[in-house]
Length: 414
Image 1 (cartoon, rainbow, N blue to C red):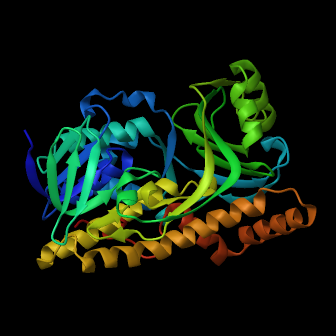
Image 2 (image 1 turned 45 degrees about the vertical axis):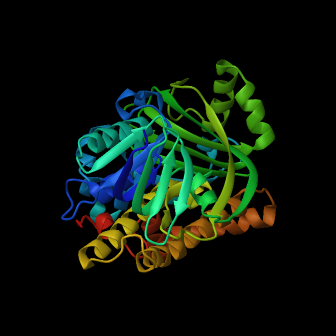
Image 3 (image 1 turned 120 degrees about the horizontal axis):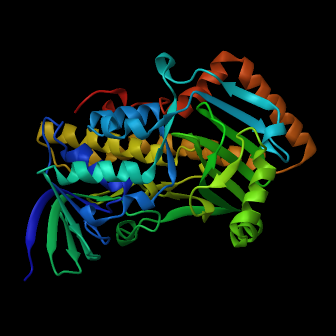
């Protein structure tokens, strides 16, 4: 039998972005919590194997404020490794022998770390538990969306179970291939980098001392990011053919290739989990909103991981959208109306384009081995390291504190 229920907002996708957005709109911390529905085709939240997702995510200082405001940070903080130092090199072969061109020994505001590394599974599990405990959030899992109906007064979403749900606002948190975005007819701008990224976690016998390393190589960046204990998360970009070769190697042969690039400053290395890889691309929606629809996270933008800002860019979307929606709620305005959505798009699109352009420029600048350009970029990085205002710009980007900040990302509450 068809069920019809009315919500303030419907979110498609129960990943990191979708669950965080649900809490930002309807969490217990809010003065006016909204009624929100999350729809996802995966298993029930309580039946998911969160420990299986050992990929690491950098959480900036501003994003940490958001998670604290949502009541999540206290749960995940014991599992988060702070960045105590960030170094950048222009590496040719081994990262260990590459000269350091940028060094941020004290990072973030008030001498706090600019970022923390956290495993995805840990964050997902904390978000899921908080969502399940929130009476204002309903979660429908094991169902796919069959149809979207964009009406002037509401959005209707039909699922594979035959249910029909209505809301003032639809939020697409369903990834880079968003079906909600496609249903609204929003086009994307997209290009590939002819590179792929390999991610994995390694164990090492020597401590990392909280040092994050970004080594720019001709075939792409090679990042060694500290996790709790003697572990690090790697994001290793190569041209696509080389990635295919590396992924086909057995564990021992792959570890030998890794040791050649990372050196021995971390001691003995071993693989802590399975390797994964994906093609690198830039993808930005031509519009972030449509009639009663807002795009967040990968549904709105996918950027090069060279600066580790992709997920944090999505969290800023969530904080800004929540602020726009809650302001409309307090004013008694239409939550999914043109005024609310226009304010959100104006806020987020410009910032997204700046960050995307910065990451794209860095990727193109460093993904080559032309001698004059290599010398110029080395000189440029050295200059950044000794000019405080320029260095502060990069620190603010790393900490996520550049540009207009949503209230939730400054430690405030809605």
